[in-house]
Image: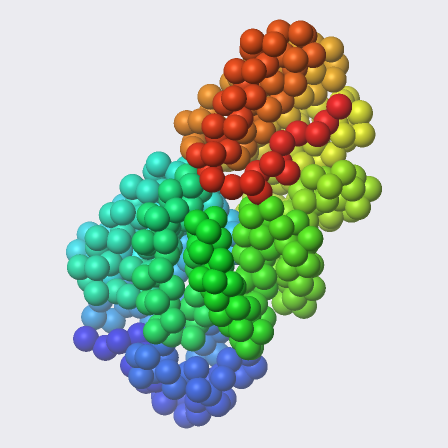
Amino acid sequence: MSSLGQRIREARKQLGMTQAQLAEPDLTKGFISLVETGRARPSLKSLEQIAQRLGKSVSSFLEDGEPAAGRDLAVVLKQGEAALRQRRWSEAVRTFQAAAEVTGDAPPAARAALQVGWGEALLHQGQMRHAQERLTEGLQQAREARAPEETARALRGLGLIELQHGRLPQAIEHLRPAARALEEGRLEARHLHASTLIALGRAYGRAGQQDEALGCVRQALDLLETTANLAALSRAYLDSGIALHANGQRERALVHLQRAVDVLELVESQHLLAGARQHMAVILLERGAIDEALPHLYESLRLRERLGGTASPAATLIELARAHLARRDPARAESYVGEAMIHLKKEDEPATRARAQAVLGLIRRQQGKVAEAIMLLEKAARQLARLDLPLDLAGVYHDLGRIHADRDDQAKAAGAYRRALEALRSADTLGGLGRLSSLP
């Protein structure tokens, strides 16, 4: 049974092509050598480039000698991994769900990669419970298959879930071995290693272990500055910016996100660029800098609309609604929420749907429809509680507290504020304080 690398080598030899010629224009001779000897596995994009240079289809390199189920799964897994890298979470979930239907007698490592990738996509969608189920199963399969990178990714995902819930010892217990495994792994996982170190640093920092936290951040930054992979560099800057924001460090977060934007404009990654601009806008809105935030949101929306069905603009539309609500323009804010809800009918994004309900509640408050505002915010709170999103939940309860206080219902106001603080404590972070609504 020939391997992927052997099949590429045979096809290259048949054409009388050197490794350097096959690598042109975007790859390197060294990378081709690693692929052919089985020491590296190309990404879907790299495999497409190699196949094009050799005048063959991608599937032709995944056929000879492989069971049909394993062959089909390999193709679908590569598509899912590509969607993950570009942060197309809904597409990734759909792809991994499809892959689950063709596992058959696929190799254990491939089944582990399926569960881990699926879990990562669900995690980014905010579906914490389902993500934990997939990642736990993926971790068990990865360990049985002795697949170090899938093991590290599963540990990282489980660590991020524990961090989200504020369970710091458990988060460190998962993230520390994940970082160690990635440090010993291949060069292509460098951005993932840096992102894991940033998360581990956050966990250490919240646990009061500042020396360990600082060490993780320094190591992550060293990785960021030395990588020659611009795409990996941009993803790591984006991840670090999001992490710094979650830890309440807005100014540093903006610096890292701006660096991500600068690099992403060079590599023309529109999916990631839209996400980076949107997150910058969220931070600027928290600072009250509405005029600075709006250009980022409009550009993010433009990019997502250009990408069409592969990138839902719903989350960006919700942030635009927040911005116009802060300008006391509830009519325009409601129009953006309406557009978002149209997209959400076609997308499985429960967290974004809950946030839309919350913003609609704030719109009703500005319109003087207080009873409807309370109903919508309470509905959003129930959805966010089911999704285990404590920071968003704290913001909704804070808004409910303000509404009840305005109505001079001190008992209900106190109850809502107490729940907001409980949600923040469950996340064990002060970074969420900046997310509490400051809307009039």
